[in-house]
Amino acid sequence: MTNRRNFLKTAGAAMLGAAAVSRAAQGAVPEAPSMDQPATQPPLAPTSGRPYNPVVTLNGWTLPWRMKEGVKEFHLVAEPVVREIAPGMKANLWGYNGQSPGPTIEVVEGDKVRLFVTNRLPEHTTIHWHGQRLPNGMDGVGGLNQPQIPVGKTYVYEFTAKRPGTFMYHPHADEMTQMAMGMMGFWVTHPKDPGFMRADRDFVFLLNAYDIDPGSYTPKINTMLDFNLWTWNSRAFPGIDPLVCRLGDRVRIRIGNLTMTNHPIHLHGHEFVVTGTDGGWTAPGSRWPEVTADIAVGQMRAIEFDATDPGDWAFHCHKSHHTMNPMGHNVPTMIGVDHRGVAEKILRLVPDYMVMGERGMADMGEMEMPLPDNTLPMMTGTGPYGALEMGGMFTTVKIRQGLARNDYQDPGWYQHPAGTVAYELQGESPPAARKSAVSTTATEPVLRVKKPAGKAGHH
Ligand SMILES: [Cu+2]
Image (cartoon, rainbow, N blue to C red; front, side, top):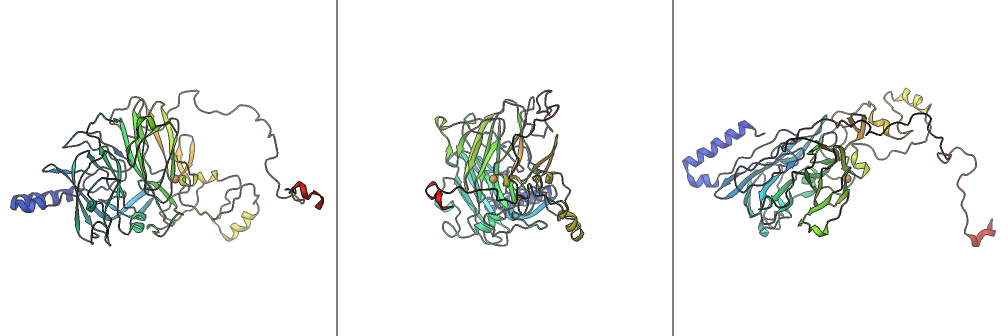
């Protein structure tokens, strides 16, 4: 995972500094590992300091640290990155240490933390440690709490991770641009007692969104609401890895929202409780079961459930437009409109023209439509029973019996036991009970307006 060449170079330089001048070594910047893979990396077990149960970052990774005189030191490099949004599409984003989002930072309640932030962007930046209790001058709001970090410079943030819980980090400098370009990351402060709120699997990811025109690579940063790529950790289905769980596991999923709208996140087949918010753990008496948690802009939620039922359970945002990849929105509804005959005429002018939506849009999932380069199909992905007709903020929670404790490998599609899959009724389907739609070809007006009773004599 670490770029070996850079690792050796940096490690070599640091060792040389330590041997030459101890004071210089004290000021030396720790190594800044970089990730070149968009796949979910295995959890990073702590190598020093207090023990904890590490989290798994969906399509991401945790930043290694070095312990120096009792302080955990991390090095984040803000830089342009190329992120694969899903196989077949890459985006020019800004991020940290090779990816967008940046690596997850994991510490333990009470840890002294030192974060080196190097700015390799074309403009100044800062990092705000969203949700943390810290000295005001470490809060990272450029101009308010600190000078902006100029291009090419490194700033150092130091504070104690006082409160256990779920946090995010992002710039508080030219935010509209820098967050639209993908600058954000996750932060987890584990409780001092590793037995407290213990989960067997603890997944984390951020909700984010991009507006990248079909055929192009760079987000349009001025878009406020009409994004066309709805992503989890800068990945769109089918590029989002499944959340693999062992049957019987206690599962926690922590989600942070850094988009411009809310996302009702819905889990199939299980009820969960919200055990954590931006402000910390919820009181057990305040929890109620649900299957959808709405996550507002700027919020974090930790949801928990017992993985009691094996299968491939859909897990997605419930805004149906957020489980789609790029499409135009100014398209008339064509359901019920007979445009046979029209297509032949258009095809003479536009050879690639496709008739869309006469019977719904589901055909889109299987259509081989010519797409511009670097563009994801609107509805895509294939399951064991055919086209999945999904995109964007969609993946699966795959629950299987007998996985190893630390096994996060995709187990493939669920093999349904005989007699447990919806099946086709044999024989004739019953006839339709009523007319299917209001006719639009009738010569008489179909909808009649009944006037208020008092004016009945008017006509
Ligand atoms: Cu959504």
